[in-house]
Image (cartoon, rainbow, N blue to C red; front, side, top):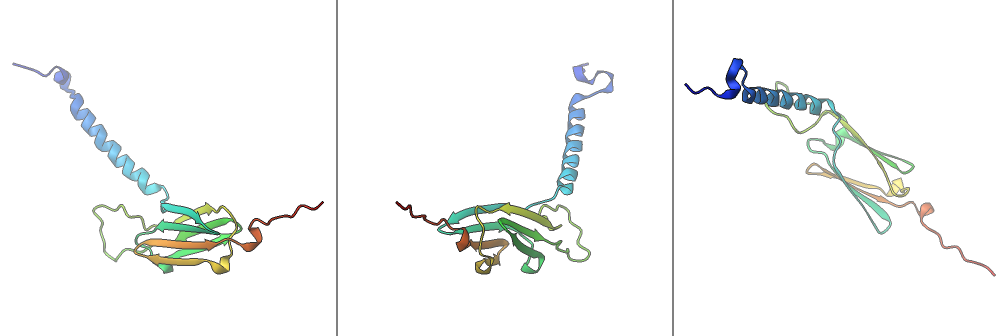
Length: 141
């Protein structure tokens, strides 16, 4: 009779590893559920403006708030309610709300800000405040 050398005493390390992997995967899902999701962002400057794209799937313009204070942009989203009676088998698209603060490279003129939400992408164009634009200083004799 051939007995696997690791099955002596009723302990099977392969089954133990499989059990630990399942436990670890379950714990990871709990960690993911507890941390606050923030939307990924692309940020770039072009001429005298800052451009941002934030991925906010499942959110509408009624769920999103955009504020600027000095050179800090804050984008937040309130929780999006699921259809009543929805029982998810797997849920990876976060709609529990978020807040993202982004330091801008310069102060912007809020009155010239453009914002558009289309297909789950929030596009922002923020024009530089003319007061903060570099000024040339003439050197006298």
